Length: 316
Image 1 (cartoon, rainbow, N blue to C red):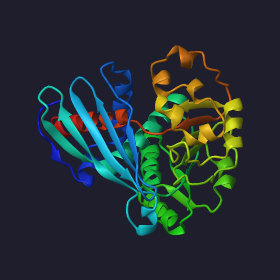
Image 2: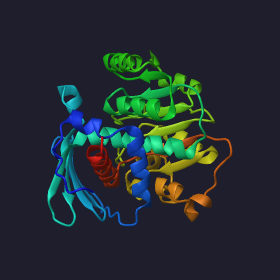
Image 3: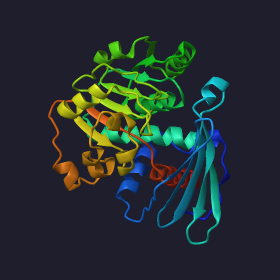
């Protein structure tokens, strides 16, 4: 990384420097980089049901710390549920290089991880995308799947009709055909692409995805959170392919843990990208849904810092 100081980046500046395709490629590079070191994150429970996350990571050139709060009840207050920053340092000098907007990075890197998983795990296919949960992650995944997979049609389900209508309007503004649906389970049979990004306070999805579906389940990232019914997850484990984002999912993937699935036996995205023995020896039905469970990892934020530096400091 250049030692150029990028300063404090606004949400808009942060987003502009993190195009989904480039970010997905940088995430893949991080998974192949032996110098990357990501210790376990610290999760501090807060009074009132929130959490404070401290997430460090480093490679041979930069070190980052992500400090964010997660307050689920902020949705009722009209405030963001995730707030905070990512501070980027030069490893050699200790100089602070940048402060990135935490919620923007979280949204875009999570969607880029799902995009990389989709591009890597399933063949290119046409058909609509179903988004369940019309918040920040729903919007980011809509943009990423449109940009990276060429999705042209989307169905959107949300507990809030206003949120669903707003995301429909955003999708239409991008040139997509977009429709609000009241029952996401009924829409599963029409969609080869599925993203669940709900607040994950209760089971929302009880239907079975199509046999050719790719599912990115991103809403539940603690053991107590859940979006998908346990019986659906158990059935998917029998007929399809399960992949988790990192080994942190072993104790964080609420959907799979509450289904009684041994997450330690599930390959990670790094296993897939690096063609590890765990991935090569894993049973993978030729025709069955792919269920990608994402819980988050500071390595994705490190990838965002690297991506931003490349985009911002590149000539032209």
